[in-house]
Length: 286
Image (cartoon, rainbow, N blue to C red; front, side, top):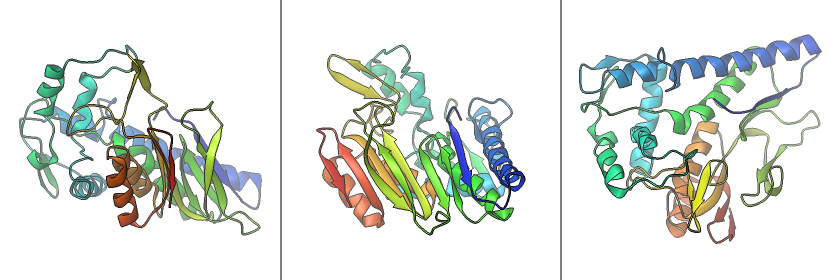
């Protein structure tokens, strides 16, 4: 998943701790193998190869992620869309090239969850070139599953940190919650702007500061709006605490794509704790 994986767990001995950590890492690798768009043997690749042709039957785990993506699409007014991965064909953040509007418009015709024919367990992408991409929730889902894997083996206190998205499943030994530092979006790596405490639950962050380029004073980040095809521009970062990492990450991503007042209303409506930094540097906390 191209992310640093950190596991912290308390056990009666080192061998047990290592076994639990290995279970977590194994689960992360399983999910990457299954859902990565970069692997020809993944479920995602099989779905995308069938675009414009016959439907594909999917397993229960994949179906649950598709159902979750459908709910997010509705809740966000289309700001979250599992079919938006095609936009990476126009946006290459290594080259720093700003695509022409006509390139983006051509790709927008391939985007839209409402076009997808989905009735468990059968999925069909009706247009050639359409894609499903679980990248918007995959890392967070992996963090949740890794924590669950350790709990299934008997772990009761610890957390999983996948690239800054944290899933905790019990407090520290003294009962204190974990203090999750939030990266300052305009400072050096490791510089925090605040912290969110969590004993059981998750904290996830979406921001414009890890993959981006700048042209003519404008920042173009990797977070792309499926409705316009252009990068998010309203926020520097949004961090959210929720019971599950996949929910925290989805809320953070959706908020990043909304204007400030709309995003704040959305986050408050979800009943989540948050720390958000607007494009002008103003900080908002729940």
